[in-house]
Structure formats: C-alpha cells, structure tokens
Image 1 (cartoon, helix red, strand yellow):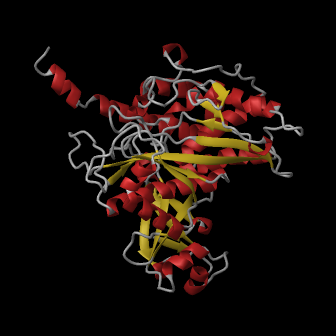
Image 2 (cartoon, one colour; image 1 turned 30 degrees about the vertical axis):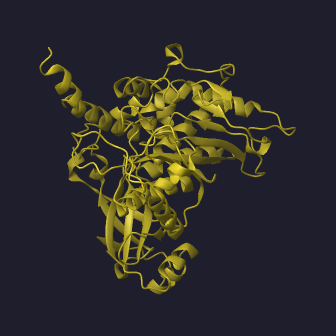
Image 3 (cartoon, one colour; image 1 turned 90 degrees about the vertical axis):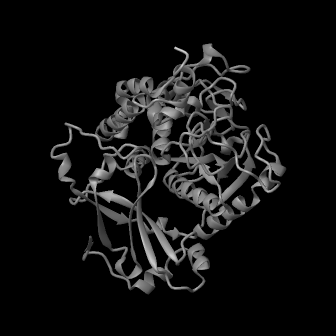
Amino acid sequence: MQEPVNALPKKSVSQWIESLPAAFQDYRQGRPVEEVECIVPDLAGMSRGKSMPVHKFSPESRYFLPISLFYQTITGEYVNLESIPNQWMERDIVLRPDMESASAVPWADDVTLQVINDLETRDGAPVAVAPRNVLKRVLAAYHERGWQPVIAPELEFYLTRPNVDPNEPIEPPIGRTGRRGAARQAYSMVAVDEYGPVIDTIYDYAEAQGLAIDTLIQEGGAGQIEINLLHGDPLTLADQVFYFKRTIREAALKNGTFATFMAKPMRDEPGSAMHIHQSVLDRKTGRNLFSTADGRASEAFLHFIGGSQKHLRATMPLLAPFVNSYRRFTVGMSAPTNLEWAADNRTTGLRIPNSGPEGRRVENRVIGMDANPYLAIAASLVCGYLGLVNRTEPRPEARGEVYGESATVLPRNLDEALDGFAEDAAVRAMLGEEFCQLYAAIKHTELDEFQREISPWERQHLLLNV
C-alpha cells in the first residue's frame, strides 16, 4: 500500500535516480533501475520490508507494514503483551524512505536499489520499538548535551560448509587447496587467500554499495574473518553493519559457502564479536572530550568508563541476545568475561587502544556479532552517557591479565541477563520503556522455546547412560 505525501516536493523518477550516490551510478553503468527494496531492521537485525517496481516508488511517498513484525521471536512465534491494547488489530506503521541510506543490491539479477526506512505511526510519531528509532533516541540525548558520539565497529564472522541439517555440527569450509580450514591462524595471509573468491566478492559488493572497509584479517577460528569499518556517526555505522551482514551472506552463498554471525557456531572454536570503539566529541569544536587540552585522559573519559562498568551488565540482553550468545564467554577463548578496563589489554571487557589524544577511545569487547547493531550500539552508548551525566567514577585500571572465575561478572546465561535488564531503571528510561517491555517479552519467549528442545548432547549422553 502506498500513500502520497502531497506537502513534499515531487521529483520525477529519473530525477531522483540521477541524484543517488556515485557508488550506485557506477554500479548501474547507465542501466535502467528495475526494482526498489524498502527495508527495515527487525528486532534481530534482519531485513524486513517490501519490494516494488521502480515506477511504484517515490521518496516522497509513504509505505506501510503491520506493527506485528516486531512481535515475533527468532523462530517466527508471536508474543502476546497485555500492555499493548488491541494488539492483534495489527495496525499499520508508516515507512519513511531515508534516501541517505540508498544503495545498490549488487547480488540481484536486475539493477535494484535498497533503501532503509524510518518508521512512524500514522500520526507521525516515531515507532518506539523500531531499533533504528531506539538508537536515534539515544543519539538525541547526546546531541541535547552538545555531544557527538563517534564509533567504529569490528565485525567477526565465520565462513562454513553449507549446513543443511541442523542436527549436524557446523564445519569449516573447504578452501582453494581442497583442505578444510584450520584454526589458530590469526592474521595469516595464507588463510585469507584460502577463501579469496568469497573475499573478492565481498569487496566487489561493498564497493557497489559505497561501503568502506578499513581492514580485513583472518581471525583465530577456522574460517573466521574480521572486517573493520572506518569510524563515524553511530547511525550511519549501524546502517553499514546492517548492510554488511546481508552482503557477506550473499557473497558467501555466491561462492558455495555459508556465512554465519552466530556468537559461537563451533564448540571448540572462538566466538564472534562485534567490538565497538567509542569516543565523544564536542559538537561545536569537534574536540575529543576524552582528552584534555594538554593531551591527558580527561574526567569525561573516566566517567564514560565508569558508566560502562556500572550499566553494561544490565544491557546484556541487547549485547548478547540469544541463548547461544553466552557460549562465547568462555575463559581462555578470547572473549572477556569481565567489565574491567585497561590500556592495550585484550583480556579486559573495556580496552583502551593505543592512540594519540585526538583518537582516545573506549573499545567495548563484550558485544556479540549476533547482536542487532542498532540496539547494541544504542545500549553501549547509553551506559557511557549515564556515566558522563552522573560523573560515575570507574574502578582502578586493571593490571596484567584479567581471566579466571574471580573476574567473571557477566551473566552466565540469557535468563540471568534478563533479570539484570529488568532492574536498571536508568537504562530502560533512555531506551524507552515500551521497547524494553516488548524486547524482554520476546527474549523470555525465545528462552522458553529453547528450554523445550532436546539437544544432541542429551541424546548422546543421557539416552542410554542414565
């Protein structure tokens, strides 16, 4: 369903196509655009939306989807919430194309454009449960203080052999040598070359979409890759992560492999994280608030860390959103199990990378790659914001390795994480109580569904031995 917005200026189809970014023009090479995908991220961070012929699309028009797309668990089940009156009337919400996000769909057979949409009610109010709006709400709080957060994400993922039977374990892919991928090959260029066709396709697709890659490396797991993105505006980077996850999956499929963003896809391999580097600038001067004029660490820097230490545990359902997420937090498997901080120390949950004063930043190493980027970035920035506003002092900087059971402060499972999420009123107020209630209900339902499953481990070890 489409509804024109008469108050906005109209452009012809050819006019708005010619005004699209240069990367899209290079991709289409003068070919006619055939199709437009109007998409939104759901609570899991996957694409939902509708596709239409190009002549049916206009940036000045409104499009509609039912609000119930946000009531579904990862398995497709729906949750019932007493707090939502007339929930199953399935009222329409309005899609507003954000043409700043427009990019190519390079894996499509015809020339296709994808556009991320903002979501509103018919009255023009932001849809409170939409992940992009949750992040915008947090960024607005920073802007009201005259602050501009800056982030840079690191994306870890696995390439795997196609797994068509969920009862079978996930295995590393076969590389160009005909051998299965081996673990413990971090930073190996030979290991990167093993999957050259997939990586080449990722680069090609990224270029067509105008997505900038900073660096690409082989990580520690068998078939595990890391892509680092350039720093910038949190909303823009969240959009890029959203696009990248689809891009990487499509590039892998084109080359006969799967790409997975599960936090822990293989038992004896490291998990996949989405580390987020964070700093805060003065919006007027562009100065990094984490450094003083003479280059020393500022009070704001310490308060951001203090807020992260105080509140991050409560946001774990957003940073580690599934039952599998907590398998990543295993001592000795690269993922931190703590919220300590230190300079150039990868055993701490909050690492301070080496940098000059202008680049002083806090790296959140707790976030899983299975997280919705909009929600994870919003949650991490909320914790730092609360520290800045409340002038929260951090614990002393950690010395040496921070491993072992005594350093474990993160929740051990989703159930425990949800208890903490329910208790932090300051975090919930910033994210929005309506969103928090719905999100918690979704996660509790997913947890209940998981508890009803009988795993291969149980069949293997309990069927005949107890």
